[in-house]
Length: 140
Ligand code: BTN
Image 1 (cartoon, rainbow, N blue to C red):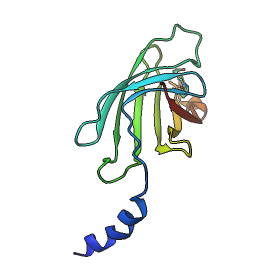
Image 2: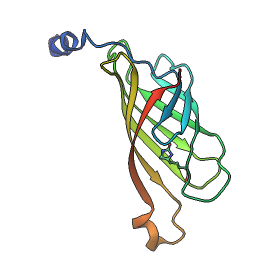
Image 3: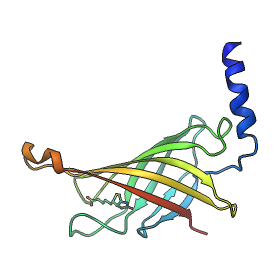
Image 4: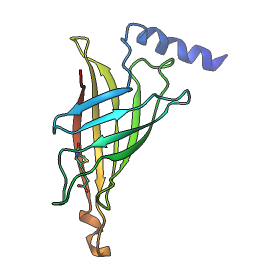
């Protein structure tokens, strides 16, 4: 009963939110694109990330992503997170963000990321993690 009462103000406040769906193809401010497949009933999803840039001068390849979101029946503009395991480097990136609908009715993913590079020596650990921001628009 207590839990129900606690949820009522949240539901009322969010009733007007337009729905934002992660499924589809997105492009970010760096020119990278990603495709997110169907989100499963438990909020988990997979996809493919094609980065436009790399820390290393190597041939870029498409890489798998694995993520999870809050369920759309509870939140129309859900928070989410996903990991990209780069297939052409020893690095891993984790993204976390929220799916919004902007004032023009367009969906936008506002994310922050941590990119962990492989440290060749223990002394290099302190400089092996980069942080940044990416905004994604749906590729029409
Ligand atoms: C690497 O350089 O080892 C792998 C590629 C990393 C690409 C980063 S992840 C964060 C940022 N957003 C992108 O779309 N690409 C870069």
